Length: 637
Ligand code: WT7
Image (tube, helix red, strand yellow):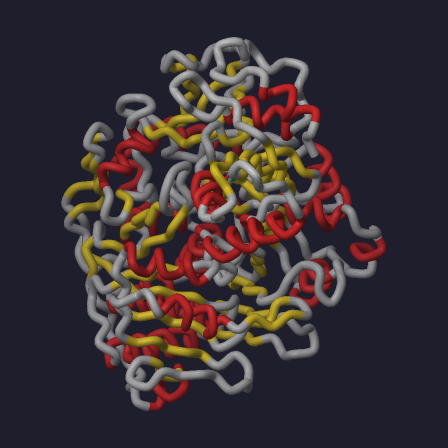
């Protein structure tokens, strides 16, 4: 298989034509895309769907293994091409270049380790790993044998790991002893050991030694990665999967209760992520692509691993942080590796834009051709800084809108092919049918005028999540009940007269902090565990680097007065139950929360106060306790 350029649209006219065709006859359109992959058996039915149940099936009857598409089929022509370049946290440590052939061998070898340790098709395996090639190897090894990986971002707490392991009954946990992050070393194994006290389904823990430090191991449960490799053979034929077999579970925050285990399946996910990767980024065979996300998020799954590898591209994995050894690290790496395609998050851009420009100018960025942005709306200022200083006004910026649930990019420019525009994700990719809904649930027609509303999608696309693991009812409730027969995204959007979309942000109780999707309900639950606390309300407010930060309003039991220890304990509770990323920036102790007569907390008002936008709070007279509002405002932080 050659480097897959055959999927790329090459002009605006071609895009328009493909888009029209993909809407008129989606099945024929996706058939022709899917035909470019390696299938053991061709599918019998391209699409079957019903958004009311909701049920979506792509390429039914098709048989394949995604790793054969990411590895085996490239070996003849791309065997010696670098698949993964790994850049360590410490710039003095050597980077690793892994060819497609080497990756193929490593994945097959480790797949046998999984088998030797009792993992079979359909078993769930939790991965809690740093950004090292072994994370890629472990996930692909799972896919090789049909096991379902559930990757938990290595910044989550032990409680968060345990709840995710238990939700999907993982049989195995794969981790590393320690991880380097800037000047810090974090002991992942200790965090796992804490989680493992409450995870009865875990039979085996495989530990990769990233450092030489002694690692506490529990006999009969924990084994070392390296020791297990010695016992395993190197050849592992791929398990033949059905197109709709589960490929992975990835947890994302919900606006209520526990995280949602989004389920992605094999065939559609592969077709969708590869097609969008090829088109949005428009890579040439010798290009070097770097996405700075962590593989623990969907961006890393789809656009560090599966999409780029299926396309036969060279993909960079970076272990460290943008600030180490200094804030020029990203640009240093682009220079060193001759990165051509650079994909990052607005929060990183804003943080780097605050640093002296010297840190950019020290490095040669002439290799760059395309810049990408993902995770939250990119503000005008950050867009221009990125465009002027990194792209030197010479690289299209693809502002890619999508979600964990969508699996792949939905609305985005196609680099160099369709127009870009600051703060706009612009046009839907082929096969994507976005619509805007008004408050009454009517579709805002695409007329020659601007529209603003809630973003929904009215037709299935191959890489969409099929369900929430173990809870199909919740899947239906969250995504398919706001508007009958439509997928609701949770985002608000604006559309101009030419059909370009600008995403304005979440309209539900999810806040995107530094590009991390956080539900406010689980944070409130964590805070409410404190014995001095009656209740709390957490909302987002604008923050110039993080995009949004969290503001917690907290009420205390009678007789208890606010103090610094309480503030510290609240932050610790949140860290422990979710992770440090969810700690509120501001905590205000209040004597009561504004509530409706039915007892619902008026988060809309609290959001406005947190944002220092109190000029128009709307009609508050119908509240249960309208007098509380002025008190909150006068003590606000
Ligand atoms: C939410 C999904 C997509 C992978 C990373 C985040 C926001 C994402 C953009 C963008 C404006 C964006 C939305 C979306 N978002 N990309 N280009 N412009 N907003 O995945 O954690 O599932 O979060 O991120 O609000 O709903 P996620």
